[in-house]
Picture: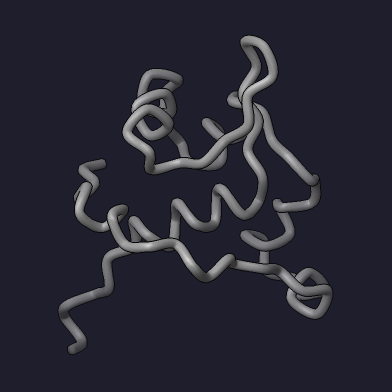
Length: 94
């Protein structure tokens, strides 16, 4: 996956929130966000990437995280912001 670094230079002013109504949907993507934070292993599984790729996303500033010692933790908002700012709209329908 190639990420355009200019995309991440946009000011992050809007936080993505998941309200209770959204959480009640049967959407499998939304329903996987049932915890307040996730570990490296869980995020690697969600994004289908390797540990090296996840480290690159963190180091390049694409993916927000919290660090406690040598452990990294990611909130739902960190993951959704990553997905939002790396999203490319389909060009076929425009």
